[in-house]
Image (cartoon, rainbow, N blue to C red; front, side, top):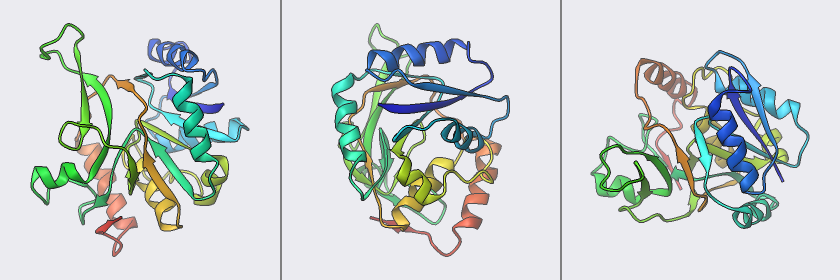
Length: 231
C-alpha cells in the first residue's frame, strides 16, 4: 500500500474526509493529513514523508477524490518498484520552455501533443447531469506513459526515489512549482517519470495569480541555464 499525504488546516475538513473515503474504496487506507494553515505544500509534504515509514509515498491535493480501484494501484506499485522509476502522476508534460511552462510558446495542437494524462474537473456548463468533465490530453483523448514533469494534483514515488532527489524544495513557497521541480530533478538524475491512467476528480480549475507568478520566477532562477528541456 501507498502512504498518502495531504495538507490541511484540520483533519476533519470535509475535503479530507471525502479524499480518505475515496482512497479506502481504492484499497488505499493510509492517509496522513499534515495540519498547517500555511500554503507551502513542499513543507507539508516533507513533514508527511517524515511522519510515515512505508515503501511508497503519495502526495495528493486535499480537494480531490480518487475514482480508480485497487487494480490500478497494484500496477502503480509494480512500476514504483523498478529502480529507474521517478515520479508517477495522473498528468504531465514532455517538455518545459524557457518560461517554465509547457504552453505559451507554440500552437495549441503542438502543446497538447506534448502532454499526457487526464483529470476530472468541475464544469457547471457541461451538457451532462454530473457537473463535471474530463480534461484529457492530447487532443481530448488521454494518452499515458513517459513525461518530463508531473502535475502536483497527485504525485507518487518510492521512498528510495524521494530520498534520492532530496524531497521537495521548500524555498518554492505556495502551492506552485514544487511538483515541476521535484519531477524535473528526478529526470535530471536519470529516473523516468510517468502519467498513469488513474481516474480522479479535482475540485479546481487552477489559478494563475500573483503567487503563481512569484513562485515561477523563483523556479526560473533556480533552473537558470537549464531550460528549455524535453524528453
